[in-house]
Image (cartoon, rainbow, N blue to C red; front, side, top):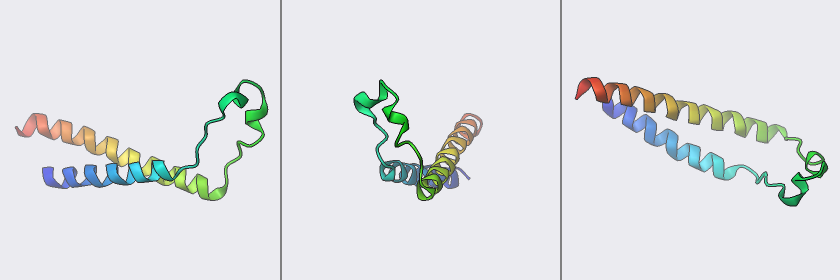
Length: 76
């Protein structure tokens, strides 16, 4: 059972890193001081889908971390 959660955590961590690196940069630089940062902040549908998949893998990672912490405490 522990091996399953170790595997799940490792795979979700790897996919989370890859998906975060696939996102487009959101840094506005000095344009964030004024209202110019709001002009180009709309998201495309592919990026919305990428956000949902990223949130899914990060959620799986967090849940598997909690489960591993709980199992580690009571199985050792």
